[in-house]
Length: 247
Image (tube, rainbow, N blue to C red; front, side, top):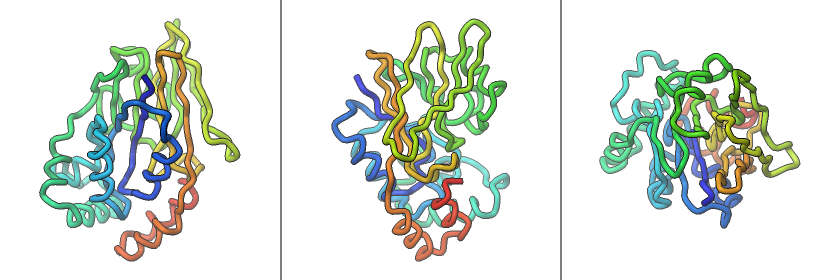
């Protein structure tokens, strides 16, 4: 079974559609690591697309904030403005769906899903030290996390913790990682809606544990069209600009 792994869609329907087009015919089930909404101009459309796919989805911090389950005191002004605007664009059914999303860690289809750190869904995992507890404590050989918007991850075996720099080149659609037992993996599929690792293309992954591979994909999309919708919605300009640079 091939699993389409999505994360950090951030209300970017154009990027989401491009990712689905790239992955068409290559997956059997789909999962999402959270942050369905926030930042982008298409919160209702992205929620509708994800629900139509029947994607197993856990919550992210922006999903909680928009649904009123999380205080936005610690959000920066740009992020808070996006949360407030997003909430105004969603109907009662959308908000109820976001409110009901389960938190991670969540085991499904032989993998474990978390939004941020294994022990704290709102914590970022950038360094090996931050990744170690998740690598040791997860119930699965392969755990997927999001939140950082950085494609790649970490692996661990016999006290050897390795940083995995696995991203396709600009001329490539995907780069594959070979899963080696009994090594354990904490992997980030990248962000669909707002990449921050220097590559503005939408990022996602396809896991095939039966054949012991995880493919890290990037899909180009019409960034200018998304920026136009963001400006029309009066979303903060820093959110508009960062799409083009992938930072």
